[in-house]
Image 1 (cartoon, rainbow, N blue to C red):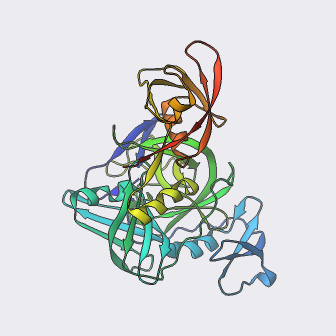
Image 2: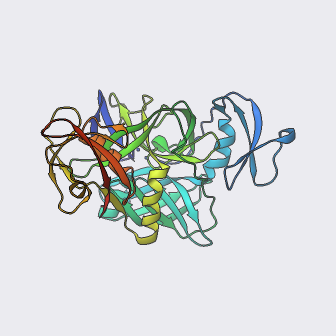
Image 3: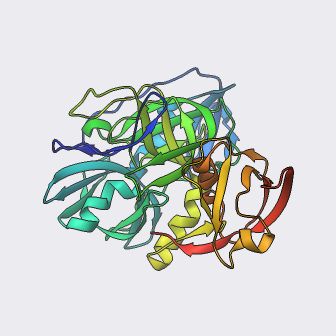
Length: 377
């Protein structure tokens, strides 16, 4: 979630027994938690590939790390990755706030930084100043390249080149129990490092206000994430980014109207985010996949009930009838309309998916649907 220096706190939709918040702040302490030491390996700083370390030393361009089962050398990952994670400071007419971001792409004179949409939304709508602060204290004015509220993603840029990029991981390869490291700027403390595991996958999470919700097919982690971590990096055991920290579940309020971590943090999977990020950099806008249905918001049973269809879209073309109840999409059980929306938005437009529904006339049926495309907001 974003951290607000003013008195106002922004809270998203309710989640479980507490409130689901969306994360930000900058400047100061490092918290490094070195876990067990095992075999030594060298991680290539460019590709993220891991090699056996001979004599516990690495050649130039590779970082020494320790591996042992599910444990990683957090201090080595932190040393490698923190120069690529930034603090984002926003000053707007209604107050100020901060969040986190990470360097996605850097050319000779321009650097593109990824963060959450909610971190920069006030600046985008109200104006003011937007500043990026590196872990060494260097600060640069930033501008918005593009943003997408549906996925809670934004890309900003600074006119400074040759900054260190984060290596991309593969969020489709992670499993529950994998070790992870989170880096960001919670509560104003830049370059803060925490560690934990992947505690769940494909967790349907919504944030934002009614009518302007973001839907995330989230990675859940117990690595501590607090207000100010929004937009920061969730890294795998090789120091590659696999998720963008975006929200936490919380039981109560403890800091300026905002709550802290209880070990339930949520990140946008990098494989899902990358398509949107690339579109924002290329065109300043992005797209989202469309099933072509409107859900019955009054329905309280299991699954997601279709109230009506969009003319000419995938669901209608496939023959799914009004009144059908979606039970699964590509083998993932659908418990309600949020789960359905989150699952659909995890795909790219044009993807073919298998949708199993309970028919209004009785029985169930499988439909093959090609997802359409729509402009994302």
